[in-house]
Length: 66
Image 1 (cartoon, helix red, strand yellow):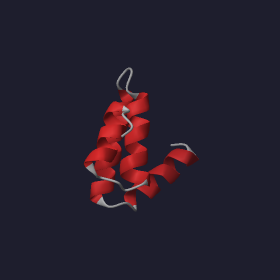
Image 2 (cartoon, rainbow, N blue to C red):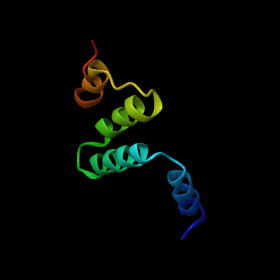
Image 3 (tube, rainbow, N blue to C red):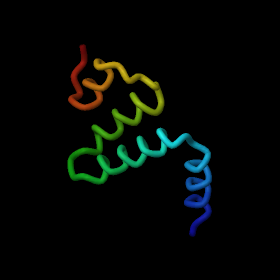
C-alpha cells in the first residue's frame, strides 16, 4: 500500500462513523459517469461546510442557486 493510501486510511479511521458513511456515499456518486461535479458539490456542502439544509442539498444535487 502506498504511503498516501495509508495516510488516507488512517485519517478515515479517525472520523466518525457518519462521516465515513458520507464519504463512501460521495465516493460512490463520484464513481458514476457524469456525476463528478455533483459529488464535488456534495462534498463541499456536507463534509466541508456541514450544511445539511434543504437549500444546500438542492444546490449540491441540482446545481441550482437560490
